[in-house]
Length: 199
Image (cartoon, rainbow, N blue to C red):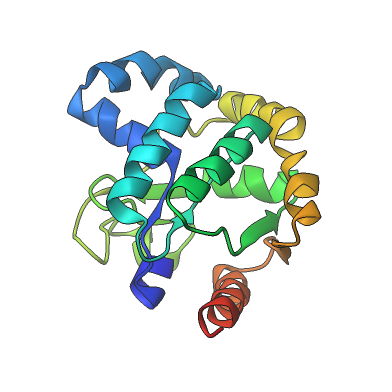
């Protein structure tokens, strides 16, 4: 939604790694089992992927979804951006209850072609699970199960939650209630981006 609305490139380490897996690259094969089990791929690999992506796509703004997830990743990102003479203007933290996460993960459908994500509960896709943007097939991800989710939540509490204090200290953290519907959350995200891009 952000790319379509603002023209800002968006990626996530998970999307990059799933593409590597689908292409059958050595990196994709190496990390496939970690992704399947819900674990986090090593900081070293993630940082290298993000640095490559930034060099190619980050010249005029960028959004990362799910990165950084650890303090070492956050520190490395700040170092990368310093080298690229780019500032990190905004960190958006979606506050979502564990129950909302469970509900969304168990109903998530994703386009295998372009990455569009929606819910199986959406009436629009209930009878015809086809992406509205590229006509790709909407499918459940093979790593979306409750066992994997428990691992992800434990990883989040131990490794990701400390990032809130890290970004609050440098005054770029904004928190949004992510328990609401997609349009309400996107409206709040849009306002934050508009406020930053208008300055």
